[in-house]
Amino acid sequence: MIQTKFTKMFGIEKPIVQGGMQHLGISDFASIVCNAGGMGTINITCYPGIEEFHEDVVKMKSLTDKPFIVNISLVPDLTKGEEIFQYIDVCAREEVAAIEFAGASPVEFMPACKEAGIKVIHKSPNAKVAASMARKGADVITIAGYEVAGHPSMDGIGTFVLANKAAKVCAEYGVPVLAAGGVADGKGLAAALALGAEGVVMGTRFVATTECPISDNHKQWLLDHTEKDTALTQKSIHNMARVANNMAAKLTLEMEARGTTLQELMTVISGKISKQCYKNGNVDGGIYAVGPAMGLIDEIKTVQKLMDDMVAEAEDVIGSLKAQIV
Image (cartoon, rainbow, N blue to C red):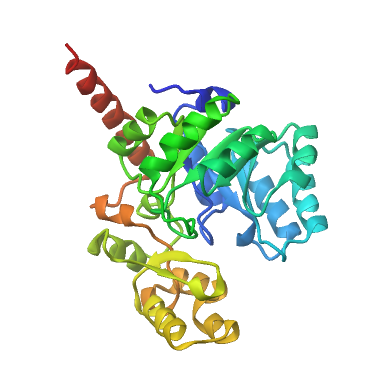
C-alpha cells in the first residue's frame, strides 16, 4: 500500500485521481474509481443545469460512500459567479469532499468552500500559479503538464519539470501536489512520487477501461494509435486543446490555418457534437480529448484491475530502486 499526504487527507487507499474527463465524468463512472480505492471526479459540464447536477451528486452518494471530487471550470470573462455559488451550495449540502477549480482564479469562491468544509483543489498551469494558490489557501494543487489531454498550458512545459518544481514550491505551504499529464501506469506513479508529488491524476488511461462511458470505437482508436497521434487545436481562439488527431481535429486545424470564426469552428469543436459521437461511436465526427499517454496503453482493463496493477507496479519499481542502493 502506498500512503501519501494526499491519501491521508481524504482517507483513501490509492494516490490515484480520475480527472474531470468532459462528457465522461459522471457518477456511474466516478463512483467506480472511488470504490476501487482512488478518487473519482464528476464534472459540472456534463449536466444541462444545476438541478441535473444535484441529482447526479445524490446518485453518486448512493453508489459510493467514499470521498469524491467535483470539477468546476472557470472560463475567464464568461463564468457567472452567482451560478458557481449555486454549484458550491449543492456541494455543501451534499457534503462533497473536494472541489477542483480550473481556468480563472477561484479566490472569490474559496471562502464559501472553506466554510462548508470542502477541500479546494486548484488545477494549475505552472509552478508560479501553484505557489500563489497554495499561499491563498488551496488545499491541494493539480499541476497540469503539457502532456495533458484537454487544455494544457500554453507554456509548453512537460509534467516531469512542472511536477518537480511545483512540489518543491508548494511544500513551503504544506500543500500536496498531484501530477497530471502522461501518467498511465505504475512507473508513472512511481516517477511522480519521486518528483515530490503526492499522487497522480489520469484521464486518457481511464478512457481505456471497461466501464468508461464512451464507445468501444473510441477505446479501440486509442489502442490503435500512439503517443504521436495527438494534435493541438483551437490556438486561434486562445483555448488550446490537446485532442486525438482524427478527422475533426484535422478539419479544425485547416480552418484555423486559413482563418476562421468561432461560429464556423463550433460546427466541428462543439461539445454537443463530441458528446453525441462518444455515444454513437463516430470517432472522426467530433473532437476527442486524449493525450500522448495513449502510447503506453495496450489493453482495456477494468478500473479495479488498472488501479491495483498501477500500485503493484509502483511498489515493485520503488523496491527495485531501493535494492540498487548499496
